[in-house]
Amino acid sequence: MPKAMWNGATLAESDDTQIVEGNVYFPPDSLKQEMFKPSDAHTVCGWKGTASYYDVEVDGHVNEQAAWYYPDPKPKAEAIRGYVAFWKGVTVAP
Image (cartoon, rainbow, N blue to C red; front, side):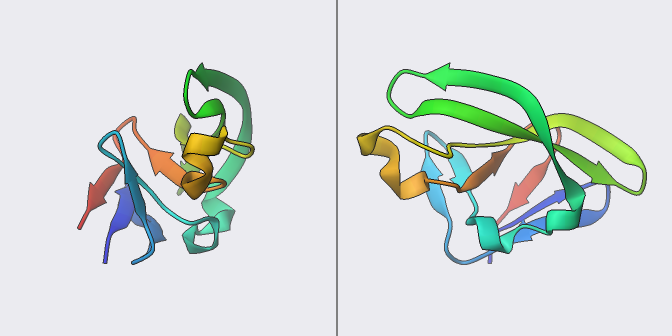
């Protein structure tokens, strides 16, 4: 089962992931919500839409904007609505 890990903690784990452009997107209900804090950051992808970010916090350590998601994706990216992907040192293992 794919899982996302950072700083020794499992952030998300699910068999219901989506892979888009080499990134593994986890469903929102698979997140350990207590480790995620909304960020004010946003970026725009031409075909997916506007991404929102989370800061990830584990044991007092913060990884800013380490997770992103599309709350209102464009039609071609509808399959990842609300799903969360990771970067900035977060390891995703099969």
